[in-house]
Image (cartoon, rainbow, N blue to C red; front, side, top):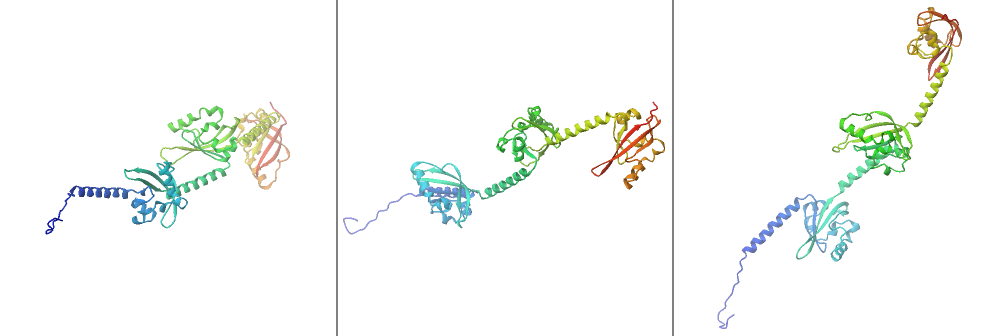
Length: 408
């Protein structure tokens, strides 16, 4: 506008935008690079502002939650939060901004998440604050735990199955590592060794149940096997002394085997333990009876023999060695015909065979005077009484000899 009123003039203001354009292009490049980096991540990522509004989301998040990019950006993050927390999410964020109290911020938490179709799954959320000069923003990194949870459930079921199988065993079962530390134990083991729970075993050295004589040496035995491969117990059944919680000791039968695993260098061992206290007592009673019986038989002044159904000598007393001239070891496992005199020697096995088939005998259950033969070949008369003894379907025969004439 001029005072002359006749002419109109114009004024233009120019600004050089070269620098601004360059800056805008640089920012655009950075945003494209950032977007490419975020979209290259296999883990879902969200950026929200202090009101919980989604500002940035990557492709992995869109795939996981089944939304498009545009469906998420500009909406509240509660869209993807599990139903139990969705309505409360804004209040969580508000409380943090006002008080600084962080229940999730800067930590990893397992939380329920929700997809577009409403299905829920467990996610691991890592949430951190990014401070800028203008506003407070938050970045969330998400990991889908669905597969992991499924695997955990499968492993849990397998562990429960293994525990059930072990607890069904009538024998005590232990699993130890290469240092001898107990990793698995069944209920029978707890009961057998007098412990009230598995926890009293787990994490402790297996030497706690080893008899005092070997307890301090047990780790050395294991270490020697690990170093040299020399196995004195591995892969074998051994009778050993074990120790209960109260310190009392008892006999066990131990079967120990190494377990091959795919878990790197870990070497594991499994031990199956059977309490043989009753068996030992039974064996001791049998040995005592055998000693008593042997003592009674050896105290007899008359020769006595026991043979099987094939005529093989199983037992003979001292009187027999004195009258017939053979030592006890020379009698054992030999045929009884060695002491039979006259024409009966070669036919003796036939007599036994005939009796077993027909039940008829001229000697069994009767007293007979017969010729007998010594080691030096001389013969003498004896009075023989033979008795049949049956055990578990087998026939055995006991012969009682009365020497009628001793030429010595």
